[in-house]
Length: 324
Image (tube, rainbow, N blue to C red; front, side, top):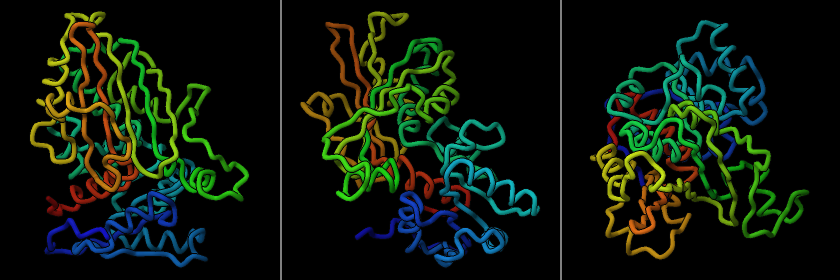
């Protein structure tokens, strides 16, 4: 059972989750169900595609979270704009993650991002692969340790819940047409994963990064890895330099934690399920100074800091709610 992580609030905000029956929407609803500052507005099952009923809830809500496919999210925003509504939005889809009029919903992105989110009317919630890749890459580029034109490769594995109801069925339901008993699969073999433009834009990379995502036979959890040939980088930074840049960037941040070198050095395995059920991302720097190599790894719950937990963190900021 999830205990409430929220302190009692002095005001109540009406929140409508459009698409609450999906994987991300269900977890957002679960997190908000015992939130003292939130009144949840919902549609009946037979009203979820009723545009007039949805519009009425957008009008009644102070905040709305869009947990929809990309095109449906764009249509929802157009409907809100056409009606002249002032409801504040968090979009959990890919539709607006590189849009200049939307604030990127990664509060730890830089020192001013939390304040930008708090003031925003429209926030794009990051993708699960993207938020971890950006968390690793952005501080290194900002610190000058990784050139913006560096050929970046990202390796990753996620729990199958990241693929939504269809992929969940493929791993859990033997009657599903795509049912598999595989322990691990690579996918997005056309090298066109939808999170890549977001990573490139939010890090400011000159070239498109190469990402090789995989899915494992576990429901929730994720590892995203950035391999680095330190000997080839300008200035030949050490693993300690990489760690120091990340630790400085995330100092005092409760939701992004950089593991101490001794903790990382004691590991001989890294478990993608280590933070399942958590809304925290943990970064590790594995290095071999003699070989001039390092791997930075981010461990998180793809539905926690990678989706629903991140959305609730953004909602708290936008509503002025107090959370630990």
